[in-house]
Length: 155
Image (cartoon, rainbow, N blue to C red):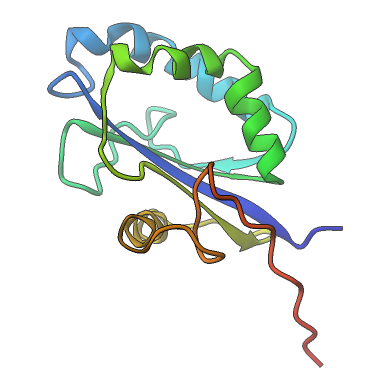
């Protein structure tokens, strides 16, 4: 039985000036559906959300064009199943309609002890670390995955 879960952050820079820009309408109109699908997916543990049921009002980069998502899953496989084998995959395929190319790592994953809920600051720090240092056991991306840490014996 695993004692770790996978946490992830992803950020995207919108083509619109902010989330209310008309170019973002179809994306925004489907946000609740995609978020509900995540919450109902096998292996889902937690996701960051604000009073509007999503995280679009949270702005850790002080940039109205950047939106973030932070979540925790039981495994990398359960996260990838949600990303690539559900309605969410349609939005991945169409992301160029709403988002600009970011130019650096926009998704970071890291192992957290089971039951740990990452803070927004922690998630931002992990992404910043990945952008500066590349993938490692500490934080990695979808192309360079690392297995969960070995459990330490604490006697």
